[in-house]
Length: 290
Figure 1: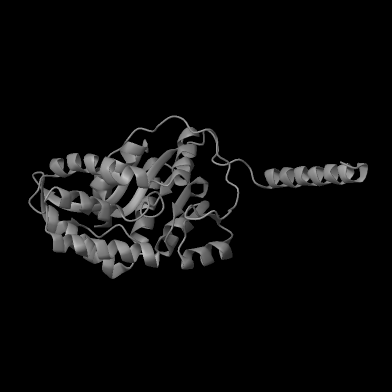
Figure 2: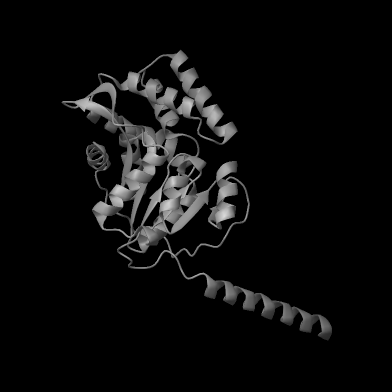
């Protein structure tokens, strides 16, 4: 290398180092180690997992002959819409929930929980986004609790949370009497503004400071939840959320492509969290609404 080239290369590296130091100074390490007033809340579908958890659960139930081929075709159409459109269509989501409720009616909760463990291994484990998993692990490593907050059935969410080593899950609660599903819901689906209400109630119960908490989602439907916390993240965002996140200067992560996003400080991934009871928390939230 010529002397002039060497000098230019040295100047370039020095400039890069200075920029990196400036960015580091502007953006303190997050999550904050040992901050007991902070926690993280993760949406599930297309944020933690590729596709819809309810669809994957439906595939597993079909394999076990819980329902017929025409019902599977309906689930498949809803999943195809979700993947192609990249958004949660309320009508399709309602249809999926109604289908799931009719399928599990008359079955025992314990039976579905046991089957859920098997279905996670068969269809879900390989669809967890590694990048989002690392983000959740960073919060765990910092000593913070990490919750799934999803419109999916709380039983499915609880299985996924446990298998990922997260703290627990809030989800839509299907009514059961003496351990048997009735085919009805307890309260409303945990979707949109209801998620924000659930997070607010959980934060109050846990003594959390929402301004120090983080939330992660792919959907504009979760803007109410994301807006509650001091550290909102758009993960694999739909078009509306991407636009909103940029306008609000929220951090972005897109694991569907090689897109670059804002830097997030991640300590080494290690350790797991203890699982808490998502069903009890969701029922408590419903009682609070009443």
